Image 1: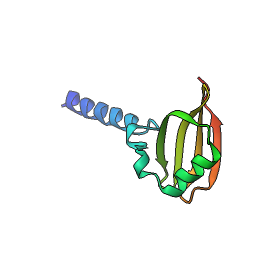
Image 2 (image 1 turned 180 degrees about the vertical axis):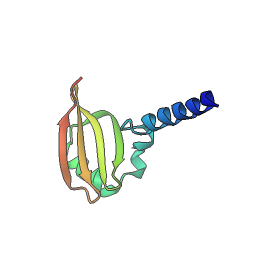
Image 3 (image 1 turned 30 degrees about the vertical axis):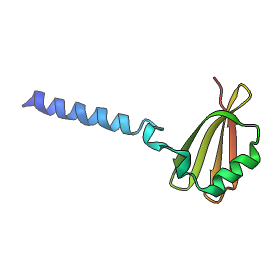
Length: 92
């Protein structure tokens, strides 16, 4: 009985750690799910962005995009109406 209880507690601990690990594949969205106002704001602010982009929906109302300008990776956040919020250079 103790072994069963320990196994259940261990499984619960593992599952709770994996869920609180921050960003996951479920956060990523396709570009077709990004509102046109957000895409327009991104394209206006970063006309030279290139390479692979990754979009995420955060907190249900903020869109984060990761992209390249030259060899440097960046991320930026936009509100649902396309207003720029923040940008960060991603250190490799």
